[in-house]
Image (cartoon, rainbow, N blue to C red; front, side, top):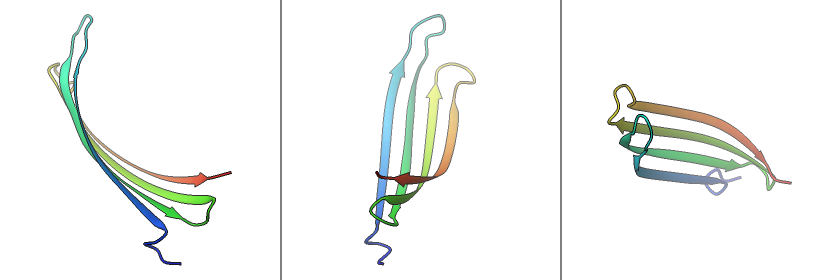
Length: 78
């Protein structure tokens, strides 16, 4: 089998501005990027590998963060 012909790449980027209300109202921005790779072993079985990076900037002290996330998945289609 041809590896590239059986592989899907799904890049994405996002930006979000948010405002919350309540006792400690928060305003901030989140942005990130992701890349997913799916390899179709058969018509029913797909392997996935994903990486995501997210950054949050907030007006509240100690509410900013960076997130790095990687995960491996197996999909089965009935």
